[in-house]
Amino acid sequence: MRDALGVGVAVGLSGFAFGVTSAGGGLTLMQTCALSLLVFTGASQFALVGALAAGGNPFTAAAGAFFLGVRNAFYGLRLSQVLALPRVVRPFAAQWVIDETAAVALAQPTRRSARIGFVVTGLSLYVLWNLTTLLGALGAGAIGDTGAWGLDAAGPAVFLALLAPMLKTTTERAVAALAVVLGLGLLPVLPAGVPVLVAALAAPVVLWAQGRREADVREGER
Image (cartoon, rainbow, N blue to C red; front, side):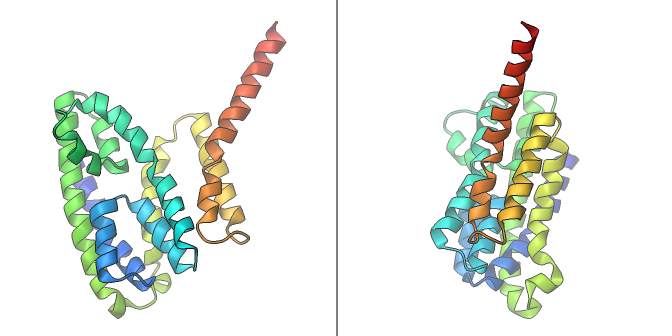
């Protein structure tokens, strides 16, 4: 399970970037630490503090973070079958259902190894993410401008590095590409946080287009 521990340590250390970015964006130490303790999904956390730092409406920022976090619910549906955890521990395990734990657990050949991978990754990542969040928030004042150091881009970069290998089909790549185009293209013209919400439309648009194309093919074969 060295791979699971390696993922937990590598990603957990990027919590420092979140702590610095959050504190530099105006959130208090308690607010920053509470986000990591309770939300614990890096992409959503970075989206929230990024939108707030850019002057976005708190409700819009929270909505964008929420939609990014919805993906964890789909991970949970799959992991519930793979891990088959006792009902009493499922509410606690749900806190650790994120990109990294899902990727490690689903890559294992047996249920036992999947459970071990899930626990090792989740525990190491949760502890380190929260510890480095605290350290980052405490040291934000000494570091200064996060943009100058590039720390505000560390979280999204880690998220993209984890996501890229998972895009195996043409449909998945098309959804990701359209989401990037929508998000970046609308960034200059819409309030902070709103482009993320619009980018969520990429999935239904691509699936609709794929369905129409398949229907046309079937119609042409008749």
